Length: 332
Image (cartoon, rainbow, N blue to C red):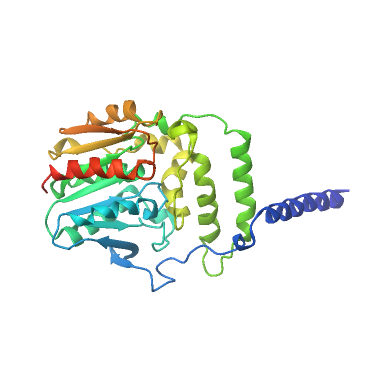
């Protein structure tokens, strides 16, 4: 009897897997893009004993602008529209430790301090002793704030595009929420089951990276977007160890999130800070950003009309105009 039960369970699982496989396009039974340690043709920068997927645009002698992507665990591909600023700035993009196409590392080797240390290595390498501009989106804005609090003398100006929270007083925006609706739960289930069809020879992170890239759109609430729709976003590869070391750990241990402080030391920063908010975002939009900007000595806020959380994708030209105007008045 027990044997028959096990056979029925196995049959159900096999049927489910076959059903998921039938829903996938033929090319989805595939591999994730290789990272820099597996593809020598990728642009890379070696810093801090780590290989980063990175690109930079513009003349080296111009003021440096370092762009920090969100996630944690995403990559900079969705922010490449900002390379339009390379006419006036030396614009630097990099996939953070353990994500995008950068070298993979275990989750236990990633922390907020390693993110700050990595960013400092980029500031040192590209800034050449001069203060730099930092532009961070979402998680990248939180990292930019933490870095500025640690090294205020190395930052000329700061652009923070909808950071989710900066310390325990605002972390509830991340931890609040109930049971996800059934379509979202089905999306997670389908992604988890189908990840076993991803080719992962020699790449132990491939399947989990692929899974997280599929479920990322499911985590974006309709009240963060215009008309409840996520804009078309491009990404190379999600970083599962990067995510697990940060937001994954917060979900497993809420006390960990309450201990995080991304604003410590920012009161020593005397440069200009620009907060950006999407006009459609009812979660971390204008009202939420006004709570955060009070920690900075010289902060201003611009709301991008007809933009949600991904303002650089919803309204790239409007966002670029605001950033250009702000940077023109800043001189690192």
